[in-house]
Amino acid sequence: MSLYYRQGDKSTKISEFKPVFPDLEELKDEIQIIREEFSDKTNEVQIQEITAYLGEFYGKPQKQNLNLWLKQEFDLE
Image 1 (cartoon, rainbow, N blue to C red):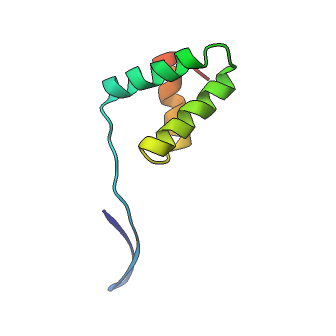
Image 2 (cartoon, one colour; image 1 turned 90 degrees about the vertical axis):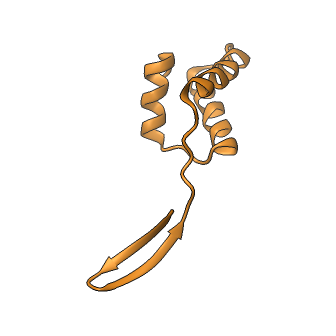
């Protein structure tokens, strides 16, 4: 995908990016493994580890979206 800024008839390319949409069931399994590995750590540490993992393998997640998903799926906040 490409992101453009448009003003009147003029378009200026700002950036290119590739959106990633992982299979949510597979992602839940991956996150569960991380949670089990860090079960003796605080929720904050678990969220940091999950965020780092996602950033490395899927790209930087949107923080609010990730926090909402972790709360809904894992009651992790």
